[in-house]
Image (cartoon, rainbow, N blue to C red; front, top):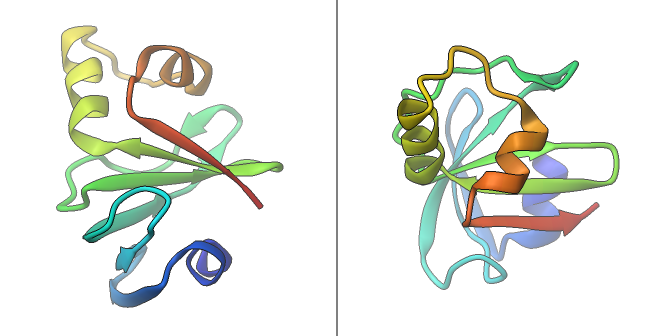
Length: 100
């Protein structure tokens, strides 16, 4: 995930674990907190109780950035225990796909 930051962030710093604060002009003109979540077999391996503003998933072709609050609202409204990646891409309004 550091490759994402090196490629798209003007400035970034490591907070802890998979959490970074970064300025990514293609997403926002301000510093936001990003958390990088592992994605295996179409399921997230991470937790969503984070202070991050955006959550970044890595696919073979690109990085997909979701707004954490919108994603959590979608999960709560639909009372999901497991999240299907394809349904997130279709249902979440704020998402950015950036090529690798």
